[in-house]
Length: 243
Image (cartoon, rainbow, N blue to C red; front, side, top):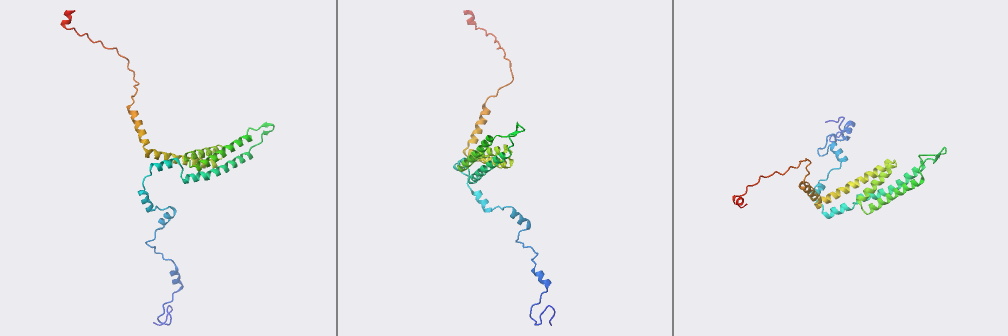
């Protein structure tokens, strides 16, 4: 075939592609790969952490914790709970110092027009509040250091309530929530230990036995009745003659 527009003059050369064909070939293929996941599945796997089947299998094969492990978990805080306390303690001290300094700067004058101002607060009260907040911060650090979960939750809750009463709700609510979280975890650990040792079942059995065997008081009044007189039994004939 003689040379045309799409072919070279030298017979066996491949045809030349136009600019339009080159653009079409440079575009990605619109056909979806059957092995590739859909858009919804890719978004779901990106936003939600997929469950590892190997981890689920190992979790099913795990043995239940022993009584010694439950006692350790009930008595001492784990690394996560300890880290929460160790980070919250210095933060609580900084927050306490900052709050007291702001409260002092906002303290109005003691006398207004020669009269005592009702909104005035004595500096001694601010010093006492600062000592209380610092003491709670130190206790928080000590309880976290020795892994005392229950006492750490109580101290954090008390610190949050103290700051909350000073009308600093943004600083008080996180400590209250952290303390409540620790107290709930301490309660669950103690409950798991009681269930493992059987204290809960024996206590319930004793309670049920006591309620079933105890006599119930009757509130209905019944008047006493006079004893009935029995008729005299006749004496035998031999006793009557002897008499």
